Image 1 (cartoon, helix red, strand yellow):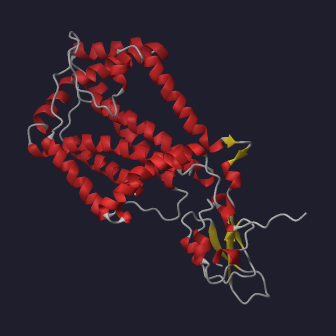
Image 2 (image 1 turned 45 degrees about the vertical axis):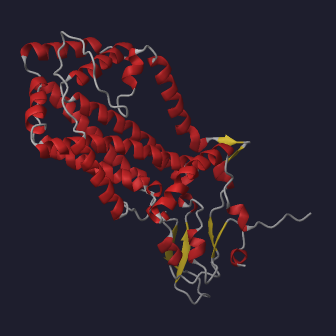
Image 3 (image 1 turned 90 degrees about the horizontal axis):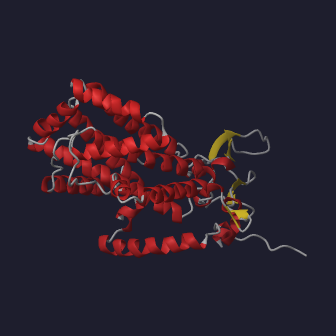
Length: 387
């Protein structure tokens, strides 16, 4: 009994019901956006990765500017923000841009992750990008919390109190930390603690930058910036919001008083009200369960088979390859390289060589070789794709 020859339809990965459902939700937003903008190339939902990088750069540049006015110490840091940053309109605006860009960064990263999730682009060579993206999101969240801690106001006091509770529950260092805080307040020599907090804040930012390199290292060509219209638009919106809604100041922290009402950032400090309500255990159990699930996704199997096993990989038909290098130039993942031929019977000098470990089965190379039909995916005859 002869088996049915493979067809181009077999190139399509086996999508799961849950990913198709998530895709329908996304398309319900993307399609109206395309109609509203009139050019799907400018749809921001297709550029969430590079928009996130743009916002990350904005956060870094505004952070450098704010550092010029910052001072170390509980009262010194608070007074520096109040008099040197919040008083002048330029510094006040830059501080607000720094805050709102940080919030927008997390939202954009989550949108980017959502798109990657429903497209199931987290297996095979994309596995490293998926895992580093999860880690970067966690580090960004920690960096945002430490940024709020640096201003010794009532918000910082609430963060600090919950941090002490965390240390008491999972580490033996709570007493040492409380002693260090108390000694710094009593002696007035608190600059070391604030300096350490700043180093942690800066270090987390640099760790994100390093992991961005890991996140994109599987790409041959990296697009660093979104379309100019979205850089100008995002930058303009951030400035307008910063002018209309400055970050403002809260009262200075006072260990003798409990803060009454504190404005909390819903992006970075969402967990604080839940902990006050006594639901902290449920929240963190849910967060860790979701994290464990998304980390395990690249290795999950459905109906006994992993999705990556259904994805055909690039194959070069050596006898048809002319060494034109179009496929190698077009492949965004570096899965094709050109080498010298050692076949004396061929009139061509170069040959395309495939690296299946870097191939994601996107099929771009098949379109590149439309003239010579020397590239295919899996066992499908390339001739059938052009019939």
